[in-house]
Image (cartoon, rainbow, N blue to C red; front, top):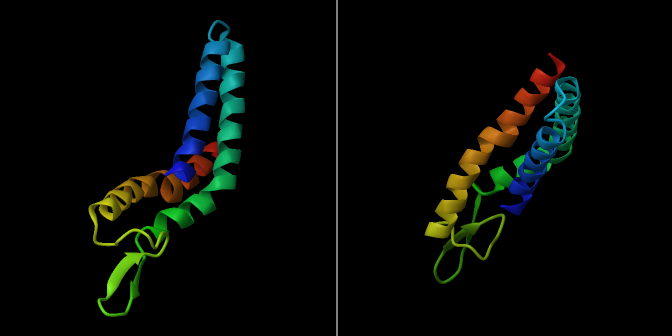
Amino acid sequence: LVKTVTPLVAVGLMGVVVTTTYFSWRDTLVFGIARMTSAAVLIGFLVAPSCANSIFAVFSKQTFVGDSPENVLRADTSIDFDSDESLGFRVYASIMILVYPIGVPVLFALAVW
């Protein structure tokens, strides 16, 4: 959760700083937005692979065979795969798939287009 939310908060804070700092001067605002876009692309380039790996790990389970077989999350073996907590993580990860594995490459394409 922290690994995927932190970059989004950083980019959001950059957007707030750019719009509040450069609000009165239109030419400077355009320059600030261009700088923010460059920083957002850099952040995306640095964190997208790691975030995507963490996101997809939530859908993987591991079965421990013993007296009673137990399915756990491969990313965190303290969480039962069939629990409501695990379901919540999978729902959140499904939303984050739109942000990192899909959204960041789209941002890259728009930045170079």
